[in-house]
Image (tube, rainbow, N blue to C red; front, side):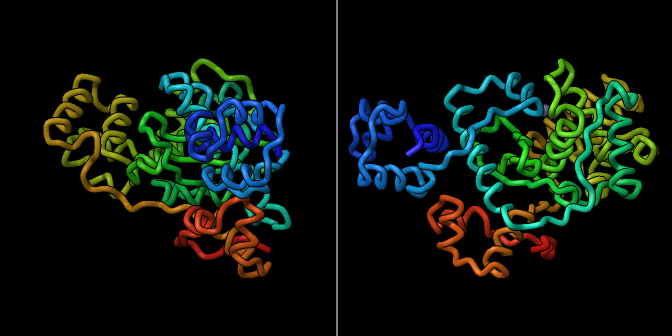
Length: 349
Ligand SMILES: [Zn+2]
């Protein structure tokens, strides 16, 4: 047993040592010593723990590293003042996702035509120019981004929708050597929020990951996201004289929220901040906030699902075998990783 894995698996469930001990009939003092590596647990105890923690006994012996979040997620965490317990839980869940991803990728060659590059905004005339260059590099057509999830997945990124159990965090993105860029988004986001959050996270990944955290990172990621989803060159004429009716009409075309369109109009100097505030207040009065009417279609990630399918179909794993590789009970593996996406298979085995 690897004490670090036991602690991480307990964190991932948001349990204290006392709660886990009581659920598994193990004294807290004994559990505490096991997590410190001072005592060895019996195989009977390990089995009870694994069952309660929704992992296999074998996972508790994995020797993987456990990582922190990195620069891409440094500032939004700081802003949101989450409790230590919630942070530990989310960090543990993201770590397990990454470890499972690394195991899924072993023995599989992934067809990512366009990688996610690294561009320092200071050397590229700011976040807007970085967004324009990335659009060109990925050969996205002018106008709206047709599908944000596909754009990231085509570049080798992996997206997973997770219930963080709190609304205070939108997404966590991490990128560690030996694993693809991983974007974990809160499953409670509306479809249009999910698109904006993914664009924001992509901005972090391109501009900030791998460098020390910088003060304006949040604002830079938002500026990147606005230009990426609503390029000034093609959105400006649409946004002139924007009102709520116009915003509602533009929403299904640009696939961003009415709020984002109004804010974009202000940032482009097409309406003043007073007008922006009054439109916002009017939306509030109509009951359009926080959840707007006219939702756009939900974009479903498919790479993870495809990866699992390749193992099951082409590599002839049984679901039990694959669940064992991923350190999960069979049912949890099927629940988490086999929701069929809408895209055809694009993983090369
Ligand atoms: Zn951020």
